[in-house]
Image (tube, rainbow, N blue to C red; front, side, top):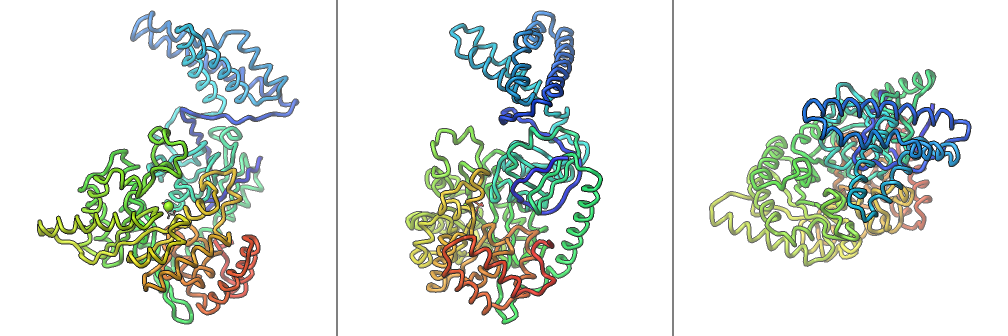
Length: 583
Ligand code: PEP
Ligand code: MG
């Protein structure tokens, strides 16, 4: 049994079989094994060699039958490499003398070898490097225990283990099979984590070495509440976790019972609790969890799932479907927020610092055609229900003015063609960059509503990459700088009588509910599974108490002090039967 600690990103417990996803660019972290394990590690390598030799022989004879002996001979290169005694010896030396794990010894030796060949002036030698990479992949697949299945054709429920999962990969996961996941990299507000929460898949990220610590087919426990992954659990641990799993499910069931009760504090202040979605199909789930509307529709996922830019009709259909299910509740459509964090790396690699690069509204301003198409579809949908238009990553007022100008132009075009739309459609901005938060008064004067995106606001205020596990300990919305920025935005909303909500993940974390109510937020938009719990907390609180608590927090200068204070305050203000996350 082995226990790994990572970052909990999606609650719930799953006990089951590990499925190891070994991508093309699998990266084997440097890992060492104790001297006494050198024998077993060497044997693992030798056994992988035998398996790979068999695979190569089988492929070779198939190729020979189909394409003739000349083409089949190409495959002999890998077999010869595999049999090369000096190469084999080098790998074994790395295991015995340098104490490398078998995976790391294979990857290091073969990659060093390939590097020399790639640098060679001899064309033939340089081309051979791809044979080496291919052989490395085969050996690693065997050592890491990848089964001969792929993600699209899973036969049974699994816990997916991967180095990383891109948002589009997560979006297309088969939820009936992938019941949990754990990754080497990632942070709490990475989009992969956000999707896991939306899909109610327990997940732990930032485990650093899980892809090398676990083999496919082994039993694992993924504890998404505590951020723990247990490999090869013993009987006692399994029994304990089965109990925890049952308790968590019972907790969820009690919450669901009260999900449609209003979210009004004891002293009569109503806070709207809405859901964040990525696809129109999620509207139903959000309503089932008690959502009072959709506070954030991340429309870029329409592009990410299909890989092609949606046309006007694709957009319109997505909004029409959503509005039709909402029966008069609001649908907040955020225009495409595409950028380095979501687009395939190969498309953004030309930017030296993509998080500060051509993202979101900047991309829309650079390529206005896509923006115009989307605005037209949003306006058309606004004739069918209550639709709001939300602009992502506004950093300066001219971006807001430009976007509003485009909206007015499209309105005029539609009016000329007698196409119906809501002439008073609210146009709001995401406040997710410190410049917008500091300039909130100017922004509030010119927009109809503000929605605070703490996922990016924390990242840009604290200079901490939201998806990087190495700095995850520095990423906290409890930092006083973040809290003061939020306060400034709320004050701006009050000054100009514009609603201020929050749609970043902070809004769905129970530890912050008292603070956010006290600061004066009137709307919280959260991952649908968090809605019942946040609503229940609101019903259990008094606005005046929250306000006093927030005033105290605003005097504090340290994130840990703030968190301790919020924990104590929750104990004082909440009835004893209310425990965060059922824990
Ligand atoms: C945010 O940044 O807080 C936000 C809600 O947007 P996203 O997570 O899609 O970047
Ligand atoms: Mg954002």
